[in-house]
Length: 141
Image 1 (spheres, one colour):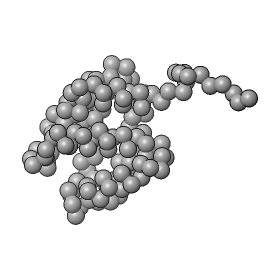
Image 2 (cartoon, rainbow, N blue to C red; image 1 turned 90 degrees about the horizontal axis):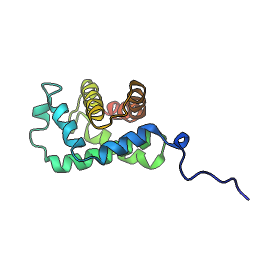
Image 3 (cartoon, rainbow, N blue to C red; image 1 turned 135 degrees about the vertical axis):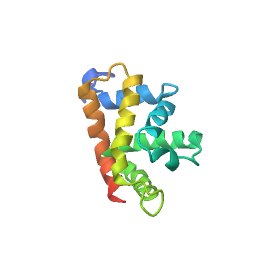
Image 4 (cartoon, rainbow, N blue to C red; image 1 turned 90 degrees about the vertical axis):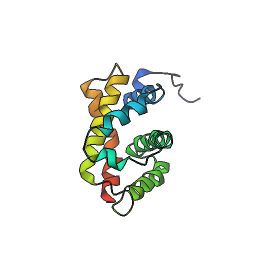
């Protein structure tokens, strides 16, 4: 007989994914992210001037989830991150690599507002979890 595993254990819970789920399932989180992000750098308003934010927010939620999975080495996230890399390239949306720190900082500011359990350690874990996907996307520029 195999070893029984507990149905739920705090030791088996990924704190970043728990925080992510808390944030993205709270109404207004992704809207708040864009409010913060759009004023984080002078280039942002122009870059998003023709954006349908309902569609954009949906894409962001999916992209964030895939970025989290990519950082965990989950193979089925690779095509999604490759599509983001392609769409953000110099030839398409022209999202220059220097803007990514504004993106992650804006995201973390929104997370801080929506996850009261965010600590400096958890924020560092969020950043580390998203780093592989962000690095991959930037390489496509």
